[in-house]
Length: 166
Ligand code: SF4
Ligand code: SF4
Image 1 (cartoon, rainbow, N blue to C red):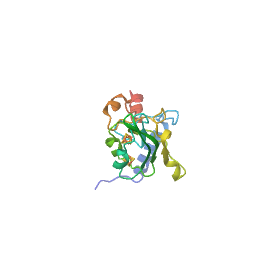
Image 2 (image 1 turned 60 degrees about the vertical axis):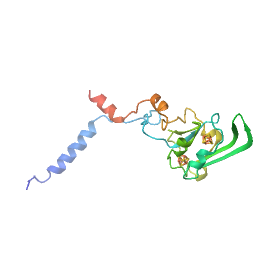
Image 3 (image 1 turned 60 degrees about the horizontal axis):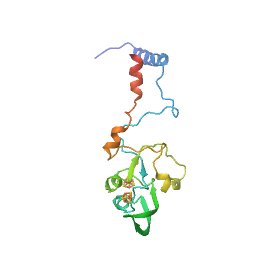
Image 4 (image 1 turned 45 degrees about the vertical axis):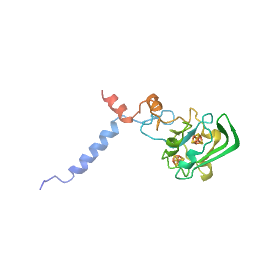
C-alpha cells in the first residue's frame, strides 16, 4: 500500500490553485468577440428563400414535427405559387434538417445563429421576413457542401492557449 504523509494531498491541490491564480486567463470577450462555429454543426434555425420557394409544400410534408405552416395563393404563375405565409414554429423544430433535404428548389437552409432565446413561447414562431437570410442569420453548410467550403474555420479557445505558450 502506498503511504503518503498526512496533508500532502491538500498541499498538491492548493498548488494547482496557486498555479491557476497567477496564470493569465484565456477568455473570449463575448459578445464583442465571437468564435466561429464548427462546420459540422447542422444549425438551430431555418433560413428561407422567398425567391426560390415555389410553394410546393414538400418541406412541410417532410417535417416530422409539423413545425412548418405554408399558405399560398391559388394563382400558379411562372411555374410557382405565390407564398403568402411561410411560418416555422422553432419551439417544435428539432433541427433534424429533413425539410432542407426534401426541398427540391434549395429554398430552405439550416442557420447558425444561436442567440434565439425568448421569454415567451409564442415568440419562437418565425414568419416570412423573419426567416430570410441576413448577416445576423448566416446559413450553415448542412446539406450544402458548396456553402460549407466557404465557411470560416472553427475557432477554439484552446488554440489561443497554444499560441500563448509558443
Ligand atoms: S419544399 Fe422548398 S420550394 Fe417547396 S414550399 Fe418548401 S421551401 Fe418552398
Ligand atoms: S428541421 Fe426538422 S423539425 Fe425543424 S422544421 Fe425542418 S423538418 Fe421540421
